Image (cartoon, rainbow over all chains, first blue to last red; front, top):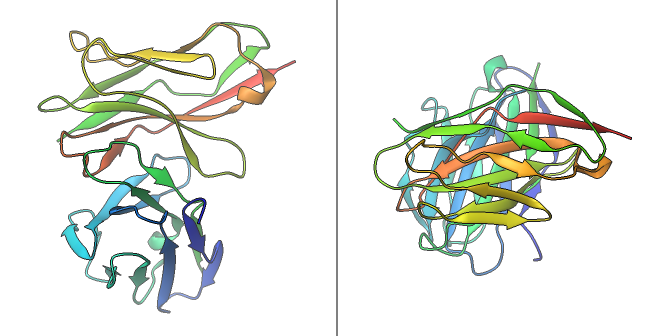
Length: 114
Length: 112
């Protein structure tokens, strides 16, 4: 596609519910990143994939957060047993490779946990 | 760890005024530096970048120079427009370009 596509754009979840957020990166982009952006803050790194390999998951806040990219293209961020503090915008970004610093962002998924 | 500090907003200017948004960083090694912009209702867009000391990134009339001696990457524009109203984020990435570290963002409001 022309850009990074994320779905859904908005998600309301009841506390304790599991959610899955999808990211479709730019075709051919090797690297894929997930970020969490709280209201009024800058994005914070969650995890990074190079193709299907998850090379860095140091930013995942708890073991309730899980990300995968099984075929090296589409990625899913899953949050189990959602809590109110998980409410944020979840951003996906992709880049051609680690040798090319430009990352292109999707519009994000706004998750609200009630 | 690596970090980025930006001036707090909002920055309120009249059209055609000069803009400076300050950004300083702390990093080991030699990071690449970026400015991203987020227009209302839209996603983050790369505005400009610089990958080594003394490089100047420029785009759409905006400029920023990578200053290693002062660990700064201040964003400037000579004459702002109403359409420049947005949130601006300064960011760095390490040499492996594996992740971005962002500042908290600076909201710019330009009035006619």
